[in-house]
Length: 149
Image (tube, rainbow, N blue to C red; front, side, top):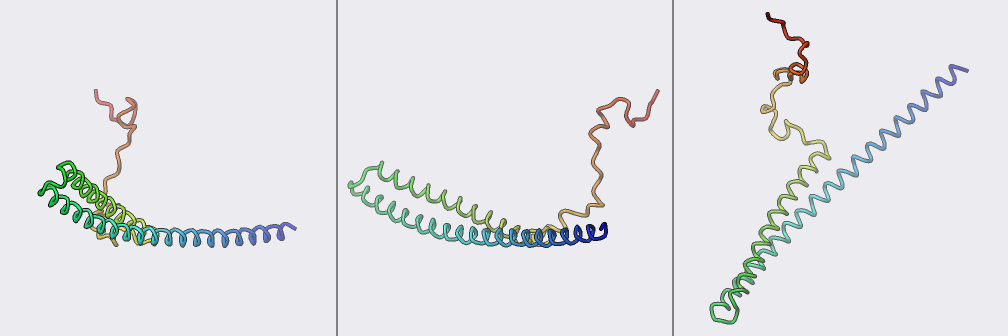
């Protein structure tokens, strides 16, 4: 009976491990797909904001020429320039989000390593790093300090 119970426990453990592996693989695939779609949408957003900037620049140019002939006020010109500046700021934000999405995509597919990013030589070997100083070394007067008279 004990042998049967042990074999059932081992079989159940094996089946649980297979299901855990399948679930982990599924989660990784979903995360990779999500990251890829976020990266794609961020690229589309950058293109849209670039088109928006071009449109606002054309509007500002038209308002500037109308203001020169007295059909628009200086306040209208300032509003148009503010719209251009806001669109340029939106472009910077969209490009930032695109870079973050690219890094998240690399992390999701497992290629965000120091060697892949060209940082292999920068980090150095772990064995070459000095060990950290114990935070308790200076805290206790009776620690490992040598007693000097």
